[in-house]
Image (cartoon, rainbow, N blue to C red):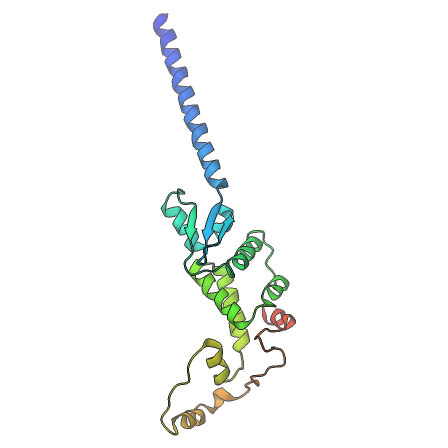
Length: 205
């Protein structure tokens, strides 16, 4: 009788221990899932984001995964405090399923060419795929049907040094590529390189 009672007590104790371990594990998992991730920009500004937003940024998520969730502060050496709020906003909208043409048109409406390029580079560094695809399309739209000189200026490419007559010869041989080119001073674009939001919305499919 005593042996049976002792056995039952041991079984009960083991069950309680297993239950406590399970609860502890669940609490740790819950705590980890609720932990905010701190992102430190290149100019030392800290932004806190939810794990669901961090997952949108492949580079950040890799840091977290490789540390088994122990790392909650991630330095972003190639992203400034100018670009990160925009990236966070885009990721929040994407997680909420609220990305559409109207939002994207408004999102870049007041960004000049340099700001769009910086946003593209930041999205590439963070491996934010949807935003990277979008900014790539915006850049493509902004240089569509532009002259060689405009594209050079847009990307900061210095003029290639041709020998006398070489450039003229190339222009003659590739004349087809210079047809249908818009004027550099496009009426849809102002001096800061900003493009009309309605035009962006029309181009984004």
